Figure 1: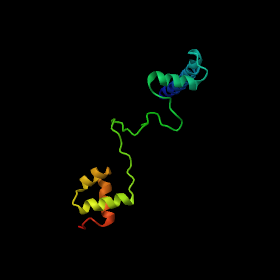
Figure 2 (figure 1 turned 90 degrees about the vertical axis):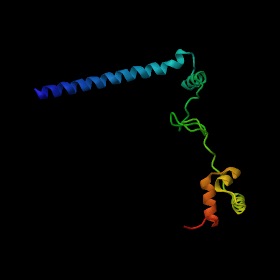
Figure 3 (figure 1 turned 180 degrees about the vertical axis):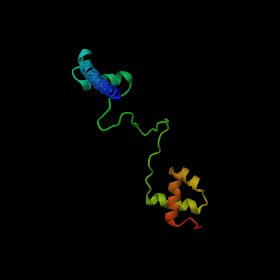
Figure 4 (figure 1 turned 60 degrees about the horizontal axis):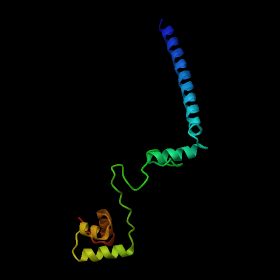
Length: 130
């Protein structure tokens, strides 16, 4: 009795797999015919037109779908550009520390992050040890 049900289950799984494959084949045929149906010579021309119509560009190779394209985070805020710390930047940090500025003030003045200021101060030996 159980073996009959197992055989029936297996047969149903095979039938389901066959049905899924035929649906996938039909869908692929329909999708392949879309560019010609709308008068485009190639799929890339069709994708460019769809992208222009929707305000989105066609995905490029090597880019994940849904990847962030610019320097914006998913929340819409811009990411900070990575600061380039030069010897001049280090000298300015030392000068500002000597004049009594706080780390936050130095970071705002030089447009670098507070952790960058702290790293520079540590490298210059301007931080007291605990």
